[in-house]
Length: 86
Image (cartoon, rainbow, N blue to C red; front, side, top):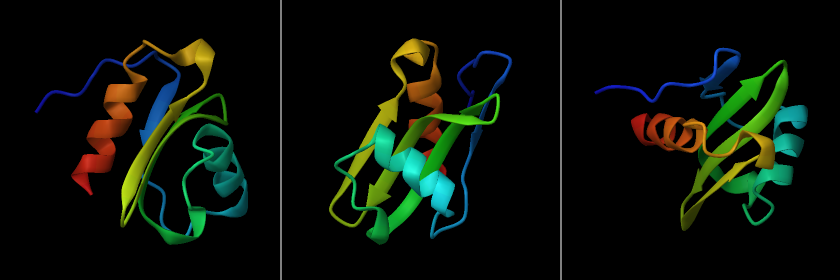
């Protein structure tokens, strides 16, 4: 399966759950409707040490959020794909 091409400085990672406090805060900013205490999966896009995208999954739903300046660069697809791998 091919992975989407991402900008050079962007990396997608699947952090362990529960999320560390700074990652939890970033995920809540990007996906404000997600219940952070009940996550069953998470994929984060990071650029320059900042979280710029998040795909979150919990028992009853999923959420995807990407900073406006980074939208449309393949990050959404990469996050969705990474979340689906878990």
